[in-house]
Length: 261
Image (tube, rainbow, N blue to C red; front, side, top):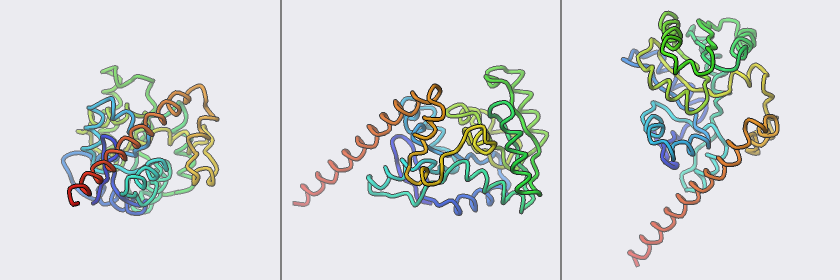
């Protein structure tokens, strides 16, 4: 499986159908620990630059996919193009679709109050055979409360889901997954705000806006107070990282050319 380097992390060069097939294969396998799937966007590249532990978690994940058109554009600029965007929300829906067909079980953890419940209702109405063995929306900051975190872990342990969807946002969900790699689940995947998007709590950008790579701008307009710093500052840092990496590649290529001459 080929990977590209972007900033301080690696991303797998895979299409959506390949990712779904690989995750379903992981569900069918018996392993000592759950597989960790990461849906990487530009914010992840920014966080990995300032938090070495976060970068290390992403590098050691079983699968890292490009959840962002900006990553696809950056990979093309760097001369090692990713085949397509693997959107985290669409991936969650596809995995629920195949889980319903295969009889696999899923568990929803996180999201705003009520978001995971509404998302579950909509997904069950679409995929009538879907087996959701748990929906958990603990209070904000539960991971720092030992007793609350243990209660959540025990509920997951009893449910033994094939796929655990963790909607705590980055980097919290990746840290939580790393700290709970002993849980009885086959696959753990961080899905950010996908519960809210599926439930309709947050309106998703029209398809043409997504294809233009401007979904971030749409979301910024929908929730400016919460997202302005993340997107404006974060995008500036991401652009800096990509340009710096491109210049390093260009300089190395120039040096090699000079040496051959």
